[in-house]
Image (tube, rainbow, N blue to C red; front, side, top):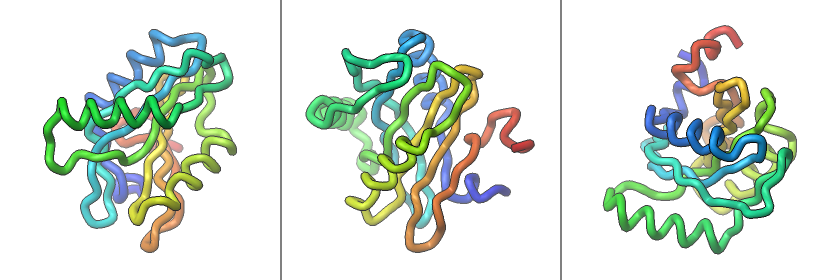
Length: 155
């Protein structure tokens, strides 16, 4: 089992939601928030919600805090799951590249507001999804292809 598999589990629905949003936005980036929960040192990502950026380009998507907060509150109400909460962000890259240095800095900076790790999922144009799980007291930053990707075992 890889380090990523030990700290992250992503629901199949999340992967398909992100892929559909990325396809609809192509050739621009899009993104949103991830909802789930933490159990011990593992993050369970259960739901992905798009947070539109009307100014997104082929190389940029920005999560507006106020819009994301409204989307988060509405989704939590609609889902009604007692464990569900914000666990990170996702966005697409319209090329076959994973998380950039700016992406890594942004999610690591956001994680300082939480006692648990946050997750960043980046949907690449080649259909693969890269995951970044921020460092915690019990593990360093973990990065790789999400479990279930055919190429995940070879990278």
